[in-house]
Length: 291
Image 1 (tube, rainbow, N blue to C red):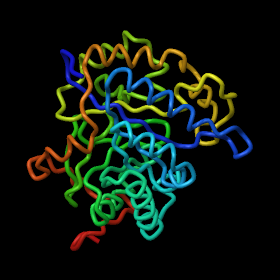
Image 2 (cartoon, one colour; image 1 turned 180 degrees about the vertical axis):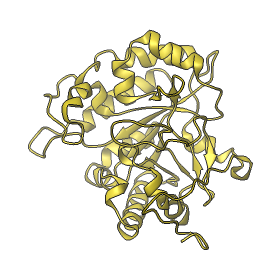
Image 3 (cartoon, rainbow, N blue to C red; image 1 turned 90 degrees about the horizontal axis):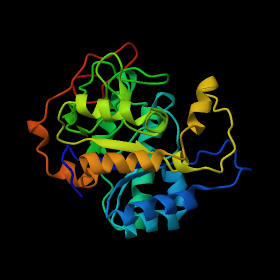
Image 4 (cartoon, rainbow, N blue to C red; image 1 turned 60 degrees about the horizontal axis):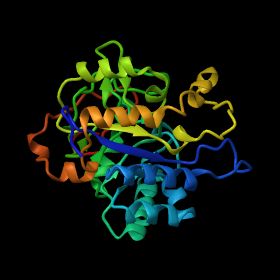
């Protein structure tokens, strides 16, 4: 599906949003709603699935794959990269990659960090990702937000890391210093005129994406306080009813692009701009000569 603007890929972060296991598991039903919406519009998306959730709900993963969508990894558990060391991260990647590939019968080449936690102190993760066979990452938020961000990262994706890993970061709208990602809470809460303005101001990109979660369309979830979000938790429950309407308007305005993995495979990584920032305090680089 194409439109008059710069087409974008729709990406879905498939994760368990419950406060605790006693609450109803609504992810399978919500994923089915999103799959039906995509199918009605002949759109193929990229689904970043938490590995442990895929292992516990294999039928969800099979349904995503059966409709022609790309399966990519959203870490083994939905934990921030800042809480992991190299060994635990690598083990989770290998385990999650194997689960998704076994269920889909297709290679898993993409990764997205939970909560965009690929930041200056976790750049070492890009080396591990390339080492175990991932071709691209889609985590970087090139600015600051309440939790994470990578100020100074290119605002127009894609670019490449020194490991050769391709980065297709978040589609950021509005000029500096108002860095706003096109997706999730911002897509739900911001009024359409602000989103439309951001689209007009956004520079052309070879590859861009919009992200959402199954819970972004959940009208039945009881609001609860997310520890890491604090008072801002209320934003997670606002604007859910209108999200797909806004997404429809974006689709009509810009058109949609194929899944990220297919787009990345058409790129020459060596022709992309290299992003090799200096290491922040406490950060490490795994590749030879940069420890």
